Length: 611
Image 1 (tube, rainbow, N blue to C red):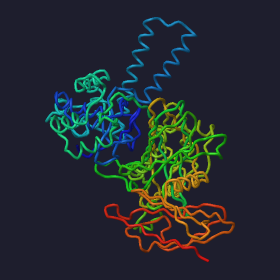
Image 2: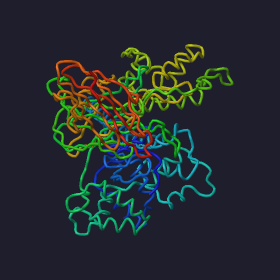
Image 3: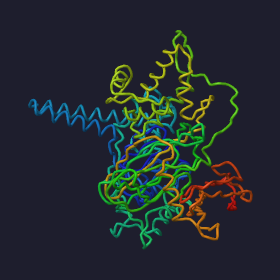
Image 4: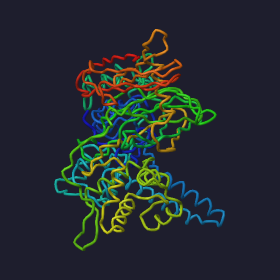
């Protein structure tokens, strides 16, 4: 396999990283089913392995995936599921039709026309969603075979090389959006039934399982052959029972939310917090990883090295009484994940980063980036660089990834940049003056809003810079003090729902959750004879966290020395420091990570109790 360009998410709707646009795919299995399908298609030659794999893999954001970069495994089967926008439109049209039927009786012919119209509208909406997942605008042209393949995959097709050559001949220079729509009308996607039949041809004994040995033989000997290492990586991550078989009959549902860590002037980190709603008990996967906003193939966002985690807390009688369930500690490249059983109810999801990688950077800026200029007509316009930054910001604050900004999402942006909220009256004015869809602001509307702000200040970019700096940008238009992320929740037996609740600094609940997790999972070392001062150290392959508990009636001061550690960085940015611990309390002492992940790191910290 190769490095996959893009970033799709598992679940009822996959979304491409950096755009949040739907990919028209739905997870129906979570156990390697696509792998057999890949081999099966390759064997029959109906579709090459690479064409199908790129459609199914893209960034391996499945809980058992490998994250962006070199993909190890993904568990997607195409079903031509409608996009979120399509479903909403369909629901809306359905509701309108139902309401109208109470007012008047429609003739059969008018009902047929209405149905035909809605289907056509839905088709073009899906086309545009797929196109905008690859291009900034539907006015942009497809300029290469690679782009054609990519945008067809976004529309739920698995184009073979023969299919690509059919529409991209030696005489082809570009294809536009209309050409793309015409291609989609001719190239129909495979159905779920067809794909299940494919698996049944491999699963000859009809027991619903595929042996690893059989899978290994198919993937290394047929179609586009995988290496031994790639197959081993797949089987290690796949859903395996005690008999060494892949179960391809599982169907998981997914919910997704985006968010961001923002670094404050004093070094404090604030982030979105979420509520997770589960209607019934279910096995659940939760993953979090930095969100890659780069639109350039082969180039990744600078913050992808920032560590991320999600702490899961169960809501009981009140928000003040949150009980730690677990946290995402299993690592796969930049993704962290957790799998477990959750009962029905409400859970808080609190994102966390240690601060070892997301910290203040004193970078010398030679010149300030230009945000606006006057065009040939003397009118103010946004520069290409500023538009690119605004597009990334739009992706970052589009928390549900539907390609639009709701009032609630926009208010998170306003609170961060201005400290104020936009009320319903102001939002109505915004809808009247800027491009919106279904009462939500489009990307173009968001751009025009900032152009209006530039015009209001006669081209003075001061206020625009206030917005950019508050979102982690420097004067070179580089996002260096923020880390966008994406959270995916997969549930086996029900549809999970996730909702952003607030944007705040590390809360008491989070600090307590971190301390509790370290005490439960870490090693304990007593510092005094009375066994009242204890240092707990939690170690994983990604980070080390130490917590100090003071059971005594008096405050204590602990001296911390990291000088013997090698290739390490801590959140305090000091090798030697002291911490004061209040009586009858517990506190996080430090987080430690490797400075260079390509080299070995040695943690050797000496704690001593000062008199």
